[in-house]
Length: 309
Length: 307
Image (cartoon, rainbow over all chains, first blue to last red; front, side):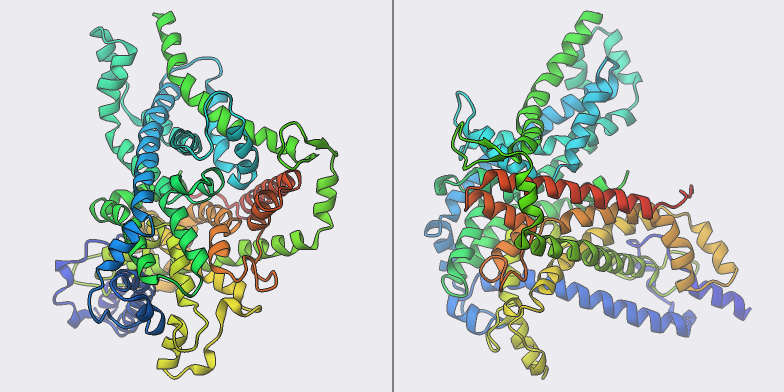
C-alpha cells in the first residue's frame, strides 16, 4: 500500500496548463520528496518570473516618473503621475511620427507578405510542375543566409535601383521586409497547404470554379489558422525589426520606432529625457502588448512554429 | 485546362519570386563578388583585388577579437539558455505536487509563468537594450542592479558592469539568455506535452524518480527539439549587434571587450566605407554559421526515437 501511494506521489505530469481545480485536498497525499522539490521548483519559477517581469513593469511605472527620479531612485514608484512624459515622447521626441511610419511600413509589408507568401506556398504545395522543388528550396535556403552578409549588397541594390527611389522610402522598406519574410512564410504556408484536404478544392473545380477563385474563396478561408500564426509571426518580426531599417532607412523623417528609440538612447547616454524615453518605449510596445495579451497562445505557437519540424 | 494551370502557376509565383530574387538572392550572390573588391561605394569605382580582403581579415587582430567573442557566445549562450529552458519547462510540467487521481501535476499557474517568460520575445531588441542599459548603470546608488545589491548588503558585488573589461561580455550574454529562455520554455513545454504519459507511468512503476525520468525519458525524447533549438540559439549568438551597439561602452568597448563581428562589419561598411572588406566579413559570418550548424547536426545526431 505504501509503495503505491509513493508511486502516485511521484508521478510526473505530462502537460502543464490545466492545474486549476484539482489542486484541492492534496495535502494529505503529499510525499516529503514532492514537497521539497515543489518548494524548490516553485521558488525558482518565481525568481525567474520576477527577473523577467520586473524590468518590464519598471518601464511602465518609470514612464510616469520625472527623468531625475528615474535616474536617482530607479526602483521608487512615481511620486505623482507625470503624464507629460507621454506627450513629450509623442510630440517632442517624434515618437508619434515614428509610430505612424512604422504602422505604414509594417501594415504594408505584413499584408504583402501574407498575400505573396500564401500564393507561392499554395502553388508549391498543390501543383506539380518542372522546377517546383528548385523554387521551394530556393526560398527555404533564404532562412539560413545571415542578414549581415546581405545587408551591404542590399544597400547598393536599393540605392542603384532603376526608376524608383528605394532607400529611406516606405515602398523600399516594405518590399525589403516582404522579401526577408518570404522564406519562412513560404516554408510555413507550403507545409500548411499540404495538410489541407484536396477534396474540397477538387469539388470546387468540378463545379466550375477557376484556379484563382478556388484559391481565394475555398483554400484561403480553410488556411485561416495557419494564416493567423504566420501573420502574427511576421507582424512581431517586422514591428521589431532593427537592422534593416538601420541600414536602409537613414532619414530621420522616415525612421521606424526601433530606430527612433535607439537613436534617442544612443544620443543621451545616462542623461537626458529618460521619462520621455520610457514613455516612448511604452508607446512602441503597446501594439505588440495588445496582440500578445489577446493572442497569447497563437503568439507562442506561431513564434515557436519554426523550431518544430 | 493545362494551359490555364501553367498560367495560374506563373501568375502566382512571379511577384514573390521577383521580389525575393532582387532583394535576397541577388545580394547573396553579390556579397561574394563585392568581397573581392576594394570599394568605397562609388558607382563603378570598385577595384578588383582578388582575395586580398580575406587575407587582411585573417591577419586582423580586430576581426579575430570580435570573432572570438562571437564564438564564446556561440558556445556559452546556447548552453545556458537551453539548460534553463529545459529546467523551467520540466518544472512547469512535472514540478507540481501530485493530486488525487490526476496524472497531470504541472505547477500551478504554469500558463502564467509561460506568459511572463515569453514576454521578452515579443518586444524589440532596442527596448531590451535600453532596459538593461539602465539595469547595468554603473553608479553605485543610481544603478538598478547596484542599488539593489546595496540594499541587501552585497555592496562588495557592486560593479560598473558594462564598464568593467572582464565582465562586460558576460553582461551582454546574460541579456541574451534572459531574453531567450522563455522561447525555449514554451517550445520544450509543447514538446513535453506530446510525450505519451504511459511512458512515464511505466517508468514510475519501475521505481524511477523525477531526476531519472528527466534524463532517461524527457531529454532523449526531446533531443530533436533540443538540437534545432541549439542551432536557433547559435544563430542569435552570432548576432548580438543591437545589444552591443546600444548598451556597450563606446560601441564594442571598453577596449574592444564586447566587440562582435556584426558590429565590426557594420562600422567597416557604413562608417569607414570599406565595403569590399566588410563584405568579406559577411562571407566569413556565413561560413561560421554554416560550420556551426553542420557541426551541431553532426555531433548531436542520435538515433531518432519514434513515439
